[in-house]
Amino acid sequence: MPGEVDTEDYADVWVFIEQHDGEAAKVSWELLAKGRELADEKGERLVALVMGDSVTHLAEEAIERGADEVLVAEDPIFEPYLPGPYGEQFRYLVEERHPDVVLIGGSHTGRDFAGRVAVPTYAGLTADCTELDIEPDTGLLLAKRPTFGGDAMATIKCVEHRPQMATVRPGVFDAAQPDPDREGTITEVEVVVDESHQRSRMIERVVGDITDITDANVVVAGGYGTEGDFGPVEDLAAALGGEVAATREAVEEGWIEAARQVGQTGKTVKPDLYIACGISGAIQHLEGMNDSKTIVAINDDPNAPIFDDADYGIVGDLFEICPALTELIEQKRGETA
Amino acid sequence: MSQEWNIVVCVKQVPDADDVSIDPDTGTLNRSDAEAVLNQPDYNAVESALQLREAVGGTVTAVTMGPPFATAVLQEAVALGADDGVLLTDRAFGGSDTWPTSLALAAIAEELDADVVICGEESTDSSTGQVPPGIAAHNDWSQLTYVEELEPNPEEDELIAVRDIEGGHEKVAASLPVVVAVGFGLNEPRIAGLHRKIYAENEFEPQEYSASDLGIEESVGLAASPTSVGGMATADPVERKREMVEDVETLFEELESTGAI
Ligand SMILES: Cc1cc2nc3c(=O)[nH]c(=O)nc-3n(C[C@H](O)[C@H](O)[C@H](O)COP(=O)(O)OP(=O)(O)OC[C@H]3O[C@@H](n4cnc5c(N)ncnc54)[C@H](O)[C@@H]3O)c2cc1C
Ligand SMILES: Cc1cc2nc3c(=O)[nH]c(=O)nc-3n(C[C@H](O)[C@H](O)[C@H](O)COP(=O)(O)OP(=O)(O)OC[C@H]3O[C@@H](n4cnc5c(N)ncnc54)[C@H](O)[C@@H]3O)c2cc1C
Image 1 (cartoon, each protein chain N blue to C red):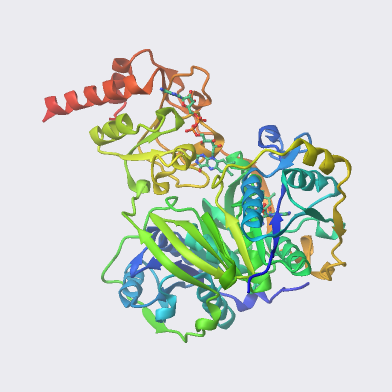
Image 2: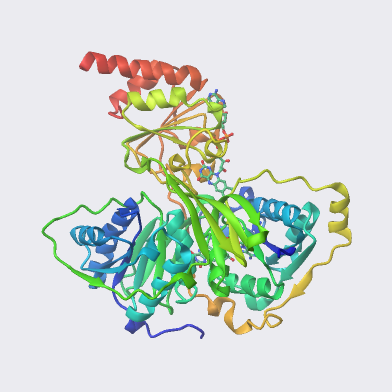
């Protein structure tokens, strides 16, 4: 069969360390934690891959956070990210070194480039996974992902091709913590790309605060029902020391930045408390917040589906309920302070 | 000098999300009774393609890979304004994962001499988002994914896009030929005009291609797919208390007593 390989020739779990301007995306550290587990289970090594312009500090950090070896491809051509050079360098390393499993963060950058790498290497690529396991008898990667808008969980396998690649949704696994005493090797690899691989050029790259809602203990989310006024949602979040989040609808309206979107095409959050304000409860939204410990829904429509997926529901106008709840919380804070 | 562009737009036929159900006993997906519709994010792709044609001139050809009845989504695209439609249909395509799917679409893009291929962000059924970069990789073309704004630059034979990234955006210029995945919701898709609709439903016939027409019969289908679906389960429903409370005070007390705040 086309592309079939001798699977025995492939070993080790690779994690791609996504970085921009020398700063690692948090999902990379999440993948190192999960990758460590998988590598131990398979009795193989955990290898981190760093591409960029000055990135040695990230290679050291990857070792502290669990990698046995770090492959470093250092060259100005890797900054800023463009799919051409990243794809080509990655292809070369895969063909040269034969990793068994490759994990890439499911950010827009990761998904842009994973899809590109999987083709020339004839890898099996599973998208946007939320669970990863090793099949006991075969040692195969079991990559699990929500499909049909989150109604079903599919388990995807790659039996005859290598590497077994997966992109993994940010926020699903806890980040690996650094241990300064850990040891590992750093290997500088040959850079095989030049300008001819670019095909596109970066005109500008604007990144503001990279808000991270995935770490928050409390998330207060607003939807279309806010009609663009996130004030009450922000105040409630502030009173609870939490982060503000939103539905895709609110992001599309331009009411709030995309980094705060929860759901299938946004972030996965699992805080202790999730308060949904003016959110109907579409399956694509639920998928990103269903693992929250306690869910509260505030909606003026008693038939809103969100109430079926909430621990506590209250029917009413969010513009009244949020401020009233904020006040009660602040009162309590005043009393205990 | 600039020329008119051959614009290909990829549209996928998917089961209507509201109709898909899961058999609680077997854990298998019941899509047979689901009506097949045009993948919602692909409306944005069609709209972008039409806007590009309006800006630079050229033609828009809608392409779908699927069973014969997937012609319906081509009709929809033609009704919206696409000039023509191509159906890739063949038993050999059955069971294709994203690797062969993107190969087939790459092959037809090459065959149609495409300058620009426009796709949706992802499908609503399997939602991998892997097909657009896959098409670009097979043809070794440039790619622009998660596009929020698109602007042609025919003088330079390039397409300039604003891409959504974590915490910000990138403005990238990509040389033609290029594969674009437009962000879901980036534009307001137009409504099909009545005349066009009548034409699409009554007169329009898609061009058909089989795998061997494209010379890829050995490289598509289940056997050529590196991944396989090893099982499907209903997503574990999380048990919720579903307690409706009457007023804010009660809500506050409940949250306090359970330690949620
Ligand atoms: C491929 C695909 C991917 C998607 N990905 C995502 C995703 O990642 N995240 C996401 O969120 N969505 C996603 N969606 C969109 C999703 O299907 C829904 O359209 C969206 O979640 C709805 O947002 P909403 O609840 O804010 O708006 P609506 O559905 O419009 O709900 C607004 C709610 O507010 C209530 N309301 C109105 N006024 C008030 C008031 N004053 N007080 C209290 N309640 C009020 C209304 O009763 C209503 O229930 C995706 C869709 C597709 C097709
Ligand atoms: C439950 C389930 C899970 C799956 N998971 C994976 C997986 O993890 N990895 C994998 O490789 N395969 C997977 N597949 C197979 C995959 O669904 C098929 O290859 C599918 O034909 C294309 O993938 P997609 O729908 O995810 O496309 P996406 O990449 O999400 O689609 C993006 C865009 O590409 C275009 N496009 C996609 N398909 C077509 C088409 N047939 N005709 C025209 N345009 C199209 C459309 O413009 C669409 O908006 C899975 C299948 C199922 C049933």
